Length: 224
Image (cartoon, rainbow, N blue to C red):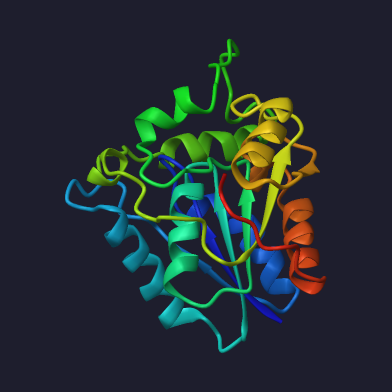
C-alpha cells in the first residue's frame, strides 16, 4: 500500500480531494490532503512545502511508497515537496509545470496559454451540489509565493506522470499534451472529465492513481 499526498490547486483546499481520498482509503492506502497557506500574505514557496511536509510527518501511515499528486496550480508545489523528501512517484493532474526561476504571472505567456471563452471553465461537469459547495469553499490567493521565482534549479529526480483531462476548458487537451512534452519531455496520459476531475470523476481518478502506484515507475524526466 502507498501514501498519497494530495495537493490542491489555486483557490482550493483539501476538500477538493475528499471524494478521491475516500476512494483511496477504501483501497487500503494512506492519504494526506493538505490546506496550503494560500491566504497567508507571508507564506512563500518554503512555507507551502513546510505545510505539506509537516502533514506528511503526522499522517504518513508508515507506508514506504509515497505518491505526491498536484492538481492545477498544485503543479508548482508538488515537485518542491519531491525535492525535500523521498518520494516514489509524482503525478501532475491537469497541472501547471513551472521552469526554474519562473514566476506564476509569467507562466501563462511562456506556455502560450490562451484564455477560454467559456463562462465556466472549472465546474461545467461537476454535479451541481458539489459545484456549489466548491464555490462556497474557494479561498483568495493572497500569499507571496505567487510573486516568487520557482526555486528549483532543475526538475527533481523522481518518476513523473502527467494526467490531462480530455474535457478540460482551462487547460485544453491539445495544449496540455504540448505542455507535458515541451516542459518534461513526456507523453501525457489522459482521462475523461473537466478541470475539476477530482469532483466530477473521483472514482475514476482514484483508480488511475492507484494503478500508477501499483505498476512500474515511468522514466525520470528533466525540465527542458
